[in-house]
Amino acid sequence: MFNQTGCDKSISTMLINISGLVLSGLPAGDKLGQGIWSLNSDWAGISILSHWLYGGGKDYVKVNGFWGRYMKNDKGDPQNGVKALKNQMQDILFPKGDSLKNGESMQIDITTAIEIENGEDIIGYQYLHGTNADVGGFQIKGSISKNDKGDTTYNLTYTWNDIIDPNYIYSSDSKKAEFAKSLPFANPTDFTIRISWSDNTVIRENPGWFNWNSGWLK
Image (cartoon, rainbow, N blue to C red; front, side):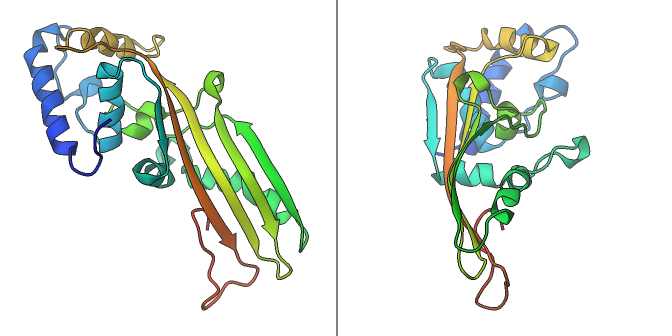
């Protein structure tokens, strides 16, 4: 897809201009840039939307890099009781690490369901929102080990599996899906997205100078 380092503004402008060509296709009383037609965006949301419009339904698979950092930077939606993704992982994994005795380790192979923020913006987190069990859900694989000093290492790979598709129980999704059909050259097609990132977190038994906790989960 698009290079996430330099195309945000140009792609945003392109989508806005394309949308402007078909304003007459919006339902009566609706305005581009307002309500469900928000143009508030980030590079990840633009990439996901563009792939849905023009990607032909091909799987969208990303490993580490920009996407890995993006997922690790999720802040959640505290106003609606949604914890940051990191904090959700801490809730799942730290009790397992705490259960180990010094010198022990365990293999991790977890599949679960995870949700992050929701909304009507062109924001990657909002498009992802919740994992889809039909394509793998949220997966955590790797190992947790505790050394003789009591330091715990979480050497894990996380994978977010989802299907980008309109949810027709919401009228806003129905309106957007219908509107997308009027965009020039667009062929709105649902697709599977898989985002994986690896991390090595070390939680020290006695953190201090030159002995700090490190990694995403710290």
